Image (cartoon, rainbow, N blue to C red; front, side, top):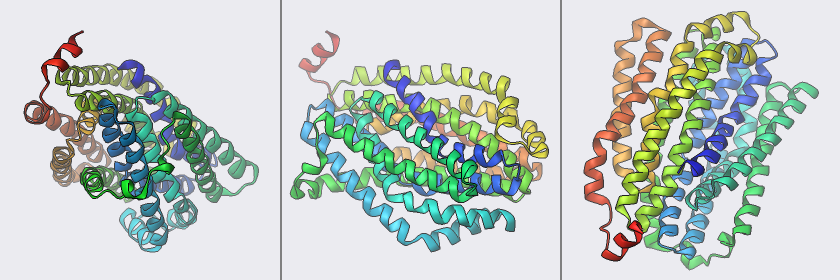
Length: 438
């Protein structure tokens, strides 16, 4: 599993870099309002786009099970349906950008200076919606096939383009936040084009899927059910992140900017460890589809173990290098000072969330999406209660509630796992049992 997880660990680090690059380049300009605007913009789009992250996760789980069944046609059809849904939903987001923007700005409640720059960033980056969601489908297909090496290549290529264009537009052409947004839109589009090339080279052509197979009622119903559960789960998760940033914004521009710097640290650590979740999606999903429960349970345990090992390593790295990270991202003295006050919370976040990262992949690989949804909603409710109880502690209370939310997710999934495994794992035939042993 580690060989599958390693490329995805490196690949997942590149995902928050789409927002991190924008944040860092703008942060070097030394304006807290501009930094806050781009950081909040990245969070808003993480919320909007990743609310439909089911297109990646659901595609990965169903693709992995098709691979386990050795159903090549099912692999191509799963990707074709995900691409179609991603394109349609992405277009709808573009068409509804005015009400979406209004709701997002109202939820954040930032200062007038931040909102002015945020509006410029939002108006450009929203056009990436269709390609971003279709990128999720391609990435999910590659993950489910176990081709994390190819997923890594496409993600790195996307971010190389993003870094180059963002520096060119912001520093070279002095386009400010508009340049940061435009660079990301172009990079996402280039990443999708490369993803199509990679998928076609693998031999499973989603564009050759017949319309009757694409619109098969039973297959579409299953996809919508799985994706619907994950959408609810991911919307709640994204809402937790959005609330975190919104409450930070209400504490002032400096606190917002400081939390934004530390949130990028958390995101990098989380996406790094999420490589084990992605590996679990592929390995557990394939074992589930091939009816090998012993392999399924073993893969789940290995994913949790390695997630904790790397959680400790990442937390230690953040504690030791967090100060340098803060200074690199922002040149504002007050932002740097404020960020250092809360560094320990951001550093601990990957370790606290390690169990949840691992179990997310296990549940998605097995398409246990309804329990995943319900456990997330329970953790989100717990988070809201803690925010209310700790409100007098200010930003410290906000970080404590956030860490407790991450921990509660993993604990709930661990407690539910034994019963789910007994009830839902397909029975292993005698032939399957002999094959898995030998």
